[in-house]
Length: 492
Image (cartoon, rainbow, N blue to C red; front, side):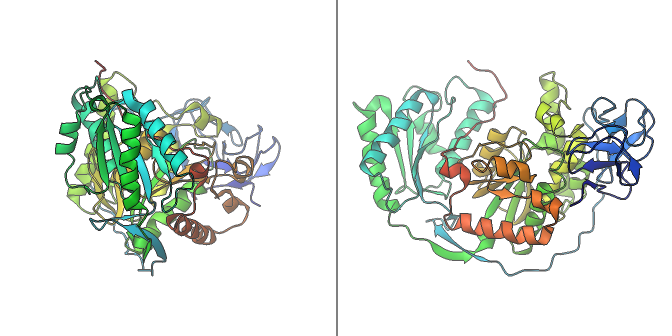
């Protein structure tokens, strides 16, 4: 097993793959401090103000002189990033990938031709005031159908919004909930309102667009004597339709896969994220779809994404995506580069550039075919970018609302969280996978102990196929299913 890694030949730092002791020799230098797993040490003298290089890119500058073999972290280096930037389009020539034969998956084909990988019944409140009623309706329905024969489960997706919101927040709440109503992983949806909220049911229906009227029901609690029994009756109607649905065989290229990381550590950009990047490239090679979000974790690595834009129009959309999010921070008088988190730093990530260059490894190497903003849905096969914050719950909700069937979620620190679509948790290190098998679906940490990226990619593809065919992810088995809606404005 390797104990250290120098990622690029031009790097001025290397990363410890296990805990290292002062006096040991690694990468041709003698350590002068203990180095924790995931943390960096200097391969050459780095003077105050000099750039620190990792991944072959600048991850910040030294804030004091750093000696060979010394620990390189937040005590002696800092970010170089500041403010919004002007960008130029330097289109990178990307060799087309060899087309591959897609594996088969068994999915549900909906009335509009979209496919789903689950056949669930959902209760979606228009307003947080009826969250308890939504949960009670599901509880009472399950009492009548404890085995869920013919469907994959019944779930209420509660949230605190839908009233006392104005402007963008109000519109975003309505749009996210509408996208959920029409998501193909649901075989039937009950939309539950209170009756006096500003997310009015009549406007919700009028702006919903085309939807399957046989698979969607609406209930206003204030309009009936007993909203629980009325809700259960409507779920019965939806259930009688959904339980007849059968899986049919399709190519894996029909899948739309979200790419997300959370609780990153020093191995994220070395194991799990590059592996997911290879998966993204693989999906492009079979005509499938992937989407990367977490715009603040593109800061410092955005030029690389911009240079992979398929054309100048797409480049301009990436500029709007990146600078728009920076302006959002500035509007609220917040520092643009208040990142990484304390957990990230504990795991060995020092600056936002360090984090972003690791985070964007999930995008692979292929061109960016489209950029999605609030309310947009996936239409382009290949790699897409999606507007949204780094917050785990919001980002996964955004990815699923844009049309993703599955989210691949890499993590070095671990999290039990799951969204309203299957959320495959991929550990960056094997210790996490062993300790937290009630959180983690896939161990990418074995890449540093001898497994090849090619072998691990094949394993990951097999896992995705099995999940698409109905195998539950860990978050599904443990009932970790949540949504969170991005909020930028005031509450009345």
